[in-house]
Image (cartoon, rainbow, N blue to C red; front, side, top):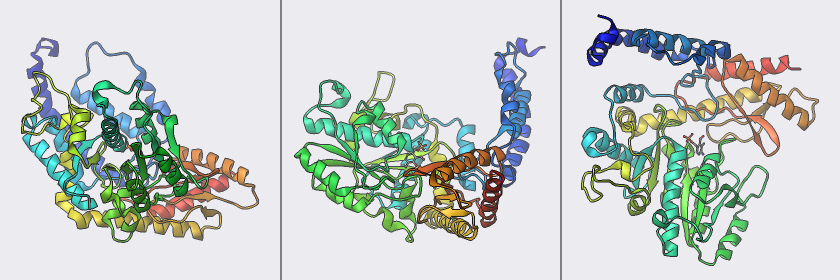
Length: 479
Ligand SMILES: Cc1ncc(COP(=O)(O)O)c(C=O)c1O
């Protein structure tokens, strides 16, 4: 009997048996090979040409399609979970988190509401409670797991917007914002691009964000912010505190900003996507002192918690605001007053995968102490890399290294600042094309820099020593 004549269920059940063996080998190779695969496989463009074929009428079956996928991954992959990826801010996976996440997929767990996954929902609530303990946030804060810090910012800012409307006497989620006053949003130049995206999506508008900067790096001008708040005369406003900016790992003055905001009628949202992890280590906790007083807080898991993509968390002081901002219901869905939790009704996503499995498993496996060690390992790696930069004549540190990001550039001497910017921009492209390491460039003020971010337990001292040598070698090749 050809597969077309078979019952689809019988066909798939038969395939699954063969797949299990294939998967065992593929997963073992994928996991064991993480340290060795290059950061970026060269020649990806040519290998990916095959991904331009028309939809097949008759498929090739699971085994062949998975073989093809493995082949494509081998010839065009980015090893973002490996020890040599320092681009953006990309964490690794703890062993427990990786295993739990694979199981979440194998069990096809949906954590929309209690009835479709009692364990997934209860585990999310427990994991969120543990995260509050880990970060020293008030136990009374409400929380929700989302895809990442962008969506966690979305939750925090949607709750802020709901509060702002209620301060003016209307319910934004019911009436919308047409013909309403402009919501004032005040922050520093460290504000992350994702926050601006969220403000665009929520009808506030990117251009309406007021950034108070005292220098071209974007550091907060607190006096100017204070004046602007005084000028508001008690009108409700949103203050966004950036606990960790992406170019050198600097922080806004968290405590001072919150103290100032508290003298006025403000909602304080803290974006601590990776910077909130400062609170996990006594060595750097002072950077994020005061966050516990915020109204809403963003933190990412797929960065420094070392759980798989995608995973971020929003914490909001007033649960009722989350309910009013995100409520939705229908006759076939759980009623709003159902005592069992419906997590899909306090956050942006309805159907949601069980991100809780990985978070719960890693916190259970390694606890507060294990996660402090991951953070401190990355701090040590950043310091070790900074030392390499100091030792190489042609590498130059461009900012103090206080967290897990090292801003530096290639500087062979004898070039103007503009020439150095051009050279480092070009070198950034060469490093990516080389593929041994993945790291990107950015700017501090007008200056072009590399900004490797170390957030993965896998990265070893020898990896960053080699990175310094490779940048130096590729830089020389451009002279
Ligand atoms: C400070 C900050 N906020 C927000 C984000 C957006 O995070 P995500 O990509 O997880 O949505 C990032 C990502 O790097 C970040 O560093």
